[in-house]
Image 1 (cartoon, rainbow, N blue to C red):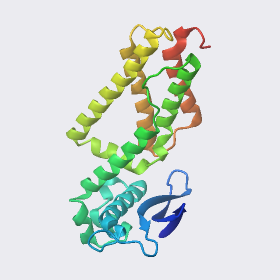
Image 2 (image 1 turned 120 degrees about the vertical axis):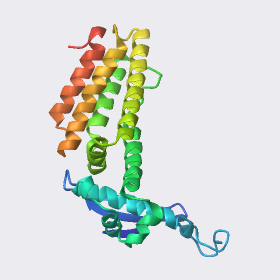
Image 3 (image 1 turned 45 degrees about the vertical axis):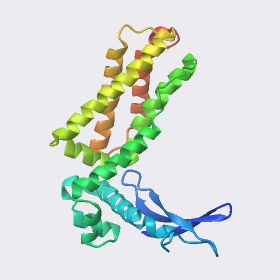
Image 4 (image 1 turned 90 degrees about the vertical axis):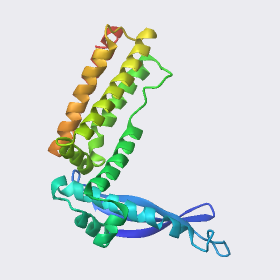
Length: 254
């Protein structure tokens, strides 16, 4: 179900399209907000060419409706059963409209996947300097683990579709391996900085980084594929393993 909402910020008003859907994991009703455009005040001129700013955003709005529709379908159905026609119908659009924005189902899946990745990356704490105290760095590692393992509820259908497609797509597997290498390098560099600052003592930061990322990734994937949220006790266990592996030699971990 979708409706429009006008929100005011100061003297200006902005229009949003709000689409409600039920989260398949929690069964809670959630809302997806899409910005439509600013509401023109009386006497305010239109955009060049006589068109409202809203009109310029119409193609983007339609594309976002299709992506949001795919996300909802992926939350209820397997990737293999979803069709372009189903995505269009879910978005409340004509079948032919789908092909004005996407060449096929894979294309709308890719768009949804990119959006999900962006949201996941924004949720993850950075390992960039500066470093804090030992307590602050332990909290940073804990926040990193929790951000990853609790985010499958963000868009589980899209991530499940990703793992489904991954099995038969060499390009996706190659890209995944490259991203994992980048993450290992980032975590390894962070551990090296901790060691250089005498916060920890590790003989092989790269090996520890690789092992910990493999653990976190395995728990994440298992939760997504099984369609269940990671239990709190599991999250706490992974946090404890990471904490001990990184900080045990600091002399303060018990």
